[in-house]
Image (cartoon, rainbow, N blue to C red):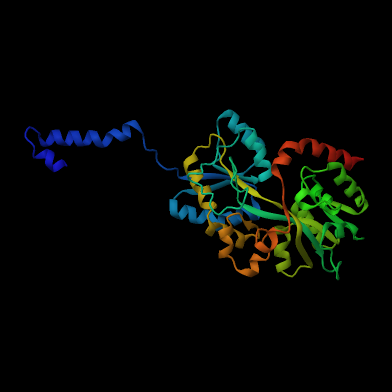
Length: 349
């Protein structure tokens, strides 16, 4: 077109250049193009989970985008303060799904852009309005194989009937689910929880319960043989078992919980944050994550990229997922405060 214009009567080369220059600048004048950020700030709980993110997605993300990932801790109180003060420093955050559903209700998270993040192939319930479930972990029954040598319990009822000591998480969520399963409630009829029935079930074994408050503490109790049985997350004892520690476990009646990723409200780089989440939810990074830490993928196509041996130890494999029940995060968002208060009263009683 420029050649035609330059050969037309009455058009000087200077005039043509001025016109072309003005036309090329016009889109930028109306819609400035912003430079991509040099880094994204990712807030997480740290530890082995963060290391698994580094191995499975952060390195590939930086290589393909030239945008670095800087990590920091993820306290909810800091998120709330940053959003309220409109001084948000985080781009993406990781947290337990039962926490993120509360943060979303408080208006602290951006809606997920599902034109960028693809829902296809994700497990039911993984794509939420303000966050995505990135993995499945299992709160399941484990036992010390030196203490329990023959016929280990394979259900919560059998575990509660066992004469030896049992370690449980000192929180109502997950623990009340286990107590109700032990009392005969069908896993598909757990919710809404019958809190008083759950507490009565726990009262039956109160004298032999050893409470733990962190996953590391719970794992140590069972590995050291201080308890016979333990309700514990699978990621805490998978590696010790593979290393020959005297521990084994079963996914029957497991309570499945999830980590989730979200973008804080007012995050500095929302576009790139959604792109990072979109990458995280594809099959290859999710398979790499499961190989780094034994939590099951929420993109079920990732299971095809994982060998059968490892797949047998993942919560979301076909063999294991049907055995358990998903923690109802909406129930806990609605009822968590009052149930926690009742649980603490029972502990003191």
